[in-house]
Image (tube, rainbow, N blue to C red):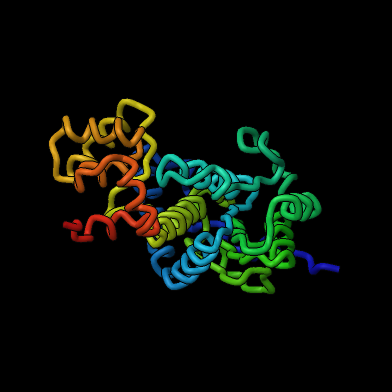
Length: 303
């Protein structure tokens, strides 16, 4: 029988003495207090940089070998995983299936709270069994670190041969079914137990770093530019044109023409414009360089 969780001992459940008079403060004082507490969350993430880096190395190795990345969570933690997965295709040009989210309670729980879903360990095991395979990475996201849905998902993923990471905002260290544990501990919330606050902020910072660092190591950016963005709005089309013009060193008209030739692919358009190649030759150059834009741009053109 599993040991009973002593929730009152978790940092995410404790009362914050600095906000004891929260209901008597004015709006300005509350804003100042919350901003001060948010800085604690940022500092907490900074202290776990080595664990984040270890998780990034794990993700890069898996995705580079054809694996996929899953974020698993319940409540706020699950929604943050959904957000991170949803942002990868437009930011990094990834195919939709490369980064996925598993939410306790399924899709309806993204929009309406179903708090009891976090206790359904059997549902987690079934979902992971159906969707995850050997060579994938599963990142469990749980502010408390003890959410049954997340722990069951990680345990099942390990049995399947997937790599596992746990992101938790509690210092509790018990037996954890994950290869890497990332523990930013921002302390008790301004509103006791409301982990959408500091714990949510710390979690979002960690997830941002996991995806951005992993995609950077996989060559999905050039410098600090999003070369695989999908220009499907006026703003993004304008950004794409600027990217091509600035990186390729050409004027706006040439950048627009290169984008048309490349059918909207910024990465390909940069090679078209910079190397003055037709789109098919530019695509071949990228393939031969393993997709690395930097390698293609740093090559000396053949005479």
